[in-house]
Amino acid sequence: MTLREKLQRGVFTITVELDPPKSSEASKTLQEATRLHGSVDAINIADSPMANMRMSPIALSHIIQIKVGIETIFHLTCRDRNIIGLQSELLGAAALGVTNILTLTGDDPKRGDHPDATGVFETDSTGLIQLANTLNQGLDKTGHSLDSPTHFFIGTAVNPDAKNPKLELEKLKAKIAAGARFTQTQPIYDIAVAERFMSEVSDLPIYVLMGILPLKSYKMAQYLHEKVPGINIPAAIMEEMKQGGKEAGIAIARRTIEKLKHISHGIHIMPLNNIDTVLALTKKDDTTSSL
Image 1 (cartoon, rainbow, N blue to C red):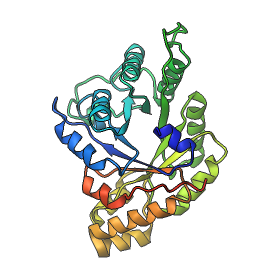
Image 2: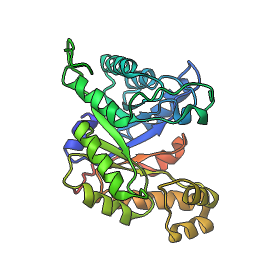
Image 3: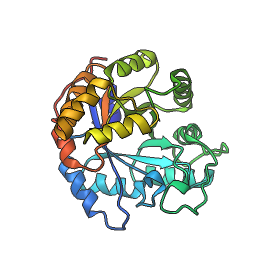
Image 4: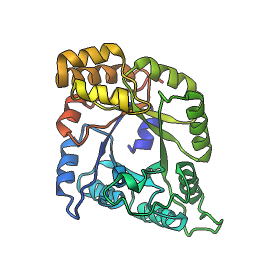
């Protein structure tokens, strides 16, 4: 079954994010992906994350699917391409059989390793969703017919613990109206936040994969809680990390995943390229969502 089919059938799905290499050589990423075979349902490949130049996520996604046999989700941002370029990339991805997409606006180039580069940002993530969905209808942006339509399964990002949850929900509804059908969230540490968010989107045509970012240390927990907008770590977890360190972080993530199996449609693990952490958290079975 494809990722889309699994979600449609209520299978609790697991996706994992990997960064592409800063190289034309993909062997390291292929080794990582191979270790994940049988443990995850799909691998996300970032699009020059944090505006740091990396291998094309579409090319790498295709290579992983062909050589490793794991379905992929390629990220596409609006930072580096205009409307023509975005559509061209999408058609190329469809031709390569890479049809799961996570649509993102993208980071400012000033944050990355090419700070003098010019960001395009001709559209935003909602506009990119509309582009992909229009191609699915067999049309380009200007209404001209394609020789054949695409079949993208379109995803978006969302923050369940946003500072302004009402505005975040309205943005998500706009993205769903544009064509998004699944979302991968910011990291979740408070189950009450996940429960509240799922109650808010329960009537919407969207599959939700809750973000899991395993904590490595108390220092990391402090940084995320204090410096990263939209990530709030409960005091009890902070204390647990203070006492237990990395082992506590794995235990917290495992506990969170077990609870999310009864709340969300799946999880999205952000392991900071530590495959051992993913394997410690995943034991693939036929668990179905209770949703």
